[in-house]
Length: 215
Image (cartoon, rainbow, N blue to C red; front, side, top):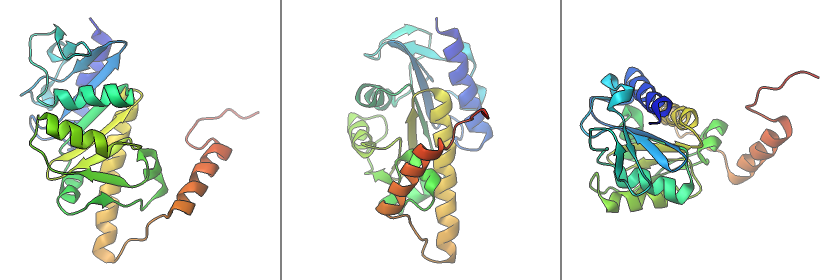
């Protein structure tokens, strides 16, 4: 069941490990197809995941295929699917995202590419991992955003599909490192609301980010 989707989740997990964005068993990935969700199992090393190790669950979190319990952050993943109609969710303990979650209340919009994440990236208050309290705090932080930082914990992104969610995870870590590098040199300039609105208009006018065939 959902063999191709399970393979995508396993491949994304291995890439996160290869990119240094997850360490050991920390982090989890899921993707949805129709009413079913392929999700990483709890306690598994993401670098070692294969399709047959990925669990398939229904919208209520009940296992419909697989032999391993789903990730301890199941409530968080299900909440993102319910509230934001996402196609995929990626949660990591990426080094720079986690570091900034220790000191910031939000990641400022220091580059226009961060607009893909919603501009500024809020930091959800710390809650114990795997709890409904954590899920509620993070879901609130994601309002109007496709990414959030989780205080003293890590980061989360979602997207219409797994490629988009994974790309946003990479972008979030890049944005966090960019801010950190700039902050070591001085006070980083940020894009204000007018500048962000100008960016949105330019994206629409230029079809920015899409491959276009010449006339």
